Image (cartoon, rainbow, N blue to C red; front, side):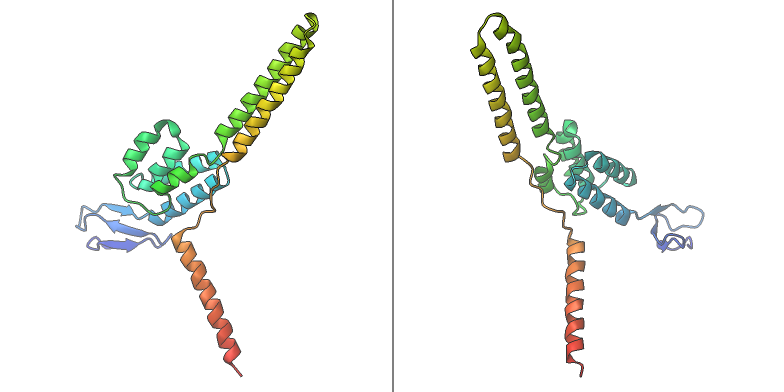
Length: 203
């Protein structure tokens, strides 16, 4: 790339290269990695849809290393790292969006991995198990068999209520649809229709 040019393209990978200072002897260049960031964030969003929190975190970290000056990365981080969610939300509002992960997505994906419901269910099963386990020797020793029966009924009821709660509050995340991909699909369908109409008109 000539020093006097404002931008150019890498002959190896095809990425656009921006020349910050198009002056001979003082050339600072930076790569436009926006398409790569967009694709990485899309993959991270698909990972969240698949309930793969670890995969999403790895991809988000990769996107942040490329650039942290987009609101999408901070909104996604607010979901994946709930400890710093408030600070991430405030930071996200300072940057422009790529349209991949917006503020409205934060509420949709807040329980994407259902980890809270799973923890509640495991806790309920443990309480029921220990309740029954402790009541057995006490009931047998003091001949209060109704205590064993009562703890058994309470344990089953506790687990059943937990299962109902988890199913009722299970996250319902729609499959990610991105505007550019949606437009490509529509264009492909239109091209196919035009091709068929064209072939039908031929004698």
